Image (cartoon, rainbow over all chains, first blue to last red; front, side, top):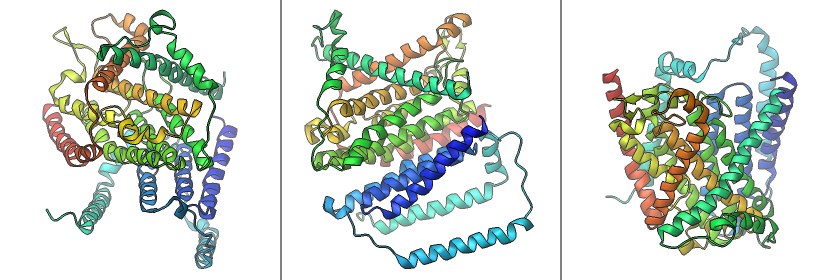
Length: 168
Length: 333
């Protein structure tokens, strides 16, 4: 595909990601905020797709948009006692804003200062396909992969333990 | 023609298939359910009532579009689109024949499941935006069902991916060409290893596409019409169009995975390659017929029974079956 089309798509996705994040923070309705979060997740998947990271994009949609966002929406809708409770007063959160600014500034400084000293990576000519990705994941990176799945398992068991069950 | 133009035409073709499928399936549903209930179904408009659905589409298009005062306006208008778009997306990876497909994705199976997993978000949105308790309950049920059954649906088809060595739907079909002993087709449904897989797939995909006996999200005897209660005219039409489209996609996926897709082993290769899309459509509509048969035969189950079946039965069974079939495949090859 031509670079113009890619450029247009990238601009649209960038606008959708950042605009969605701003809308999520500024909306007063918590349900709307959750839907904006979902939109940001989908737009991020679009960015991955544009980078030819097909598998990552699919997993992003399947796990984050398809499950995490649904879970968030589900929890919000279950815990709201009345519909009117969904609308909250706007809290500017100055402390969080200052922290975000500091972090962003530090990041910008680090990129500006140190990026020249790091070795530049070479983009491969052909994008590796999903099979190649899987092979790398289960041979070179098998141990980190297993550790990650162990962490998730511990979290799962912990969640079941904390929620108690009915003692049967 | 430029690449962008061709892509646009492909999307239009998928849209046309989706709309045509809706019209065909409504007529089919009425006739099949009618005869299952020992009734006739529509008979008056057109030959054997064939024009009935066309008239109904015209009626939906010209009806007043009511928006209740209490609804969340933006989400209420957005929800039918959020249901419709993933449903359209899901057509992209389906192989209608060895040349007729929109894209040739290596992770086509995962892609189709991803598209299907987005639909309940739209239902949840419709349920919340309607400001109606029945609607909200319907949306919640749709989301709960989907989260519970997405996992067994994905896990259940993994043995096939392990055997074929690819998640590309076209490659999976190609692995099913030929016959055993010149009679039995080499389809995966013939292989006893995949019988439990097929059972889990059927149950989970009926739940994912909101079909009776698992249509708790719009159970009319309990919650009026669930997420669709407050919708009228074409917004209602869009919600149900994607419902029918999901049924088509699930059936097409079943045909691709278990019944050899566009292939038919008893015909010569040249005939099959010419008639591929037709064979695929016939098989898919046979699958849809079976789904309607189930719909006309079984009563609706309760929501807690469905959740229990999903979390406590199907997920463990499909995990065990993955391990078992992994061992079998390894030993055989």
